[in-house]
Length: 209
Image 1 (tube, rainbow, N blue to C red):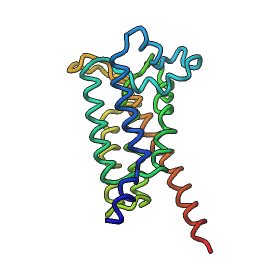
Image 2 (image 1 turned 180 degrees about the horizontal axis):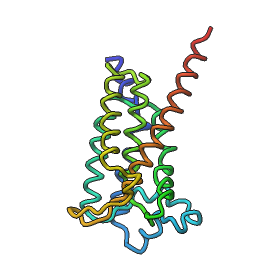
Image 3 (image 1 turned 90 degrees about the vertical axis):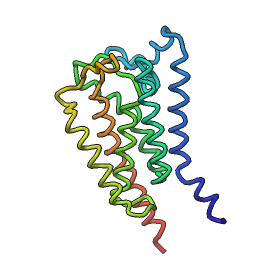
Image 4 (image 1 turned 90 degrees about the horizontal axis):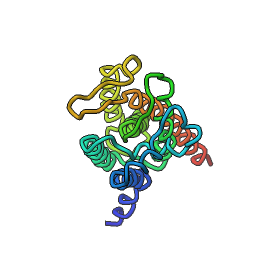
């Protein structure tokens, strides 16, 4: 029973970010359309509206888009409860937040982007890297990392976002910016590796007599 409080506090920063994205997305959905335009990242004026690199993740095109991303966020939160990403993972995810959308500027076909999907891909990449490096104290961490990395990489290869940055989703009647998914995964992997190495280095320094 003594270990329960410690277990409950593990990964609280990550869970706070999950809660923030879920609540903010719902609040943005209830706003007027004229107000939402101020929150969407657009390639032609994002440097004058820098805050959109963060807020565009909370804006969704239609109801199916919102529901899909909220369900994905719920699954991500449940998985995080299993692998318990720590504050280093949360830091990597937070830093990858704007980069996931800024990367879209490399593709001239993309005029704007919105939705949580790019951010969710970044989160998966962060967890995959930290699990692969066995930073998270869960059984068979490396196997979890390999499984997550293979699934994410396979998805990206099938989508081929580098040559098809934008595709049409006829089911949900909307354009899908796959470039944001790729950008999020790359940003998450890079920052995940950086924070994992920083954490391991700090742990070694602290372990020295």
